[in-house]
Length: 179
Image (cartoon, rainbow, N blue to C red; front, side):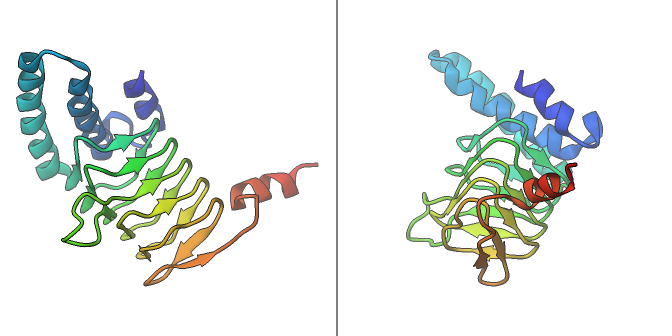
């Protein structure tokens, strides 16, 4: 089912390189459901080949052990890195040049935990064991190294957190334009 949900939200449909990179990740992650070491090994070899191919063609690297929710949109391919310990919620958008990874060499397993409906702008970097709340917008080229609460906006280097209240900007627009 994830395949069809991902396809439905991919703006370029089956031509989207981000969609295919995500499907390669999902295949690799799917192999963990099998107990048989032989099946896991065979799927692991297939995944490794496809992941390197996807990386060369799209410039997208997604760690196989990352936990990615439903309907992730990768808007533009190129220079996207997702750490293997990262968690990304449902209905998120990632644009080109985004890094979701660790911050320190002496803590290589620390990775961001990103909530639902997070919009990540081009070139943004989310680094370390930070928590990004639900309905957050991260501006282009922002460098996020601290937690971001629900509904906030993170902009700048290092990112400055702008609280926007309980409603996200999209919800505010819908509620003010309703008759």
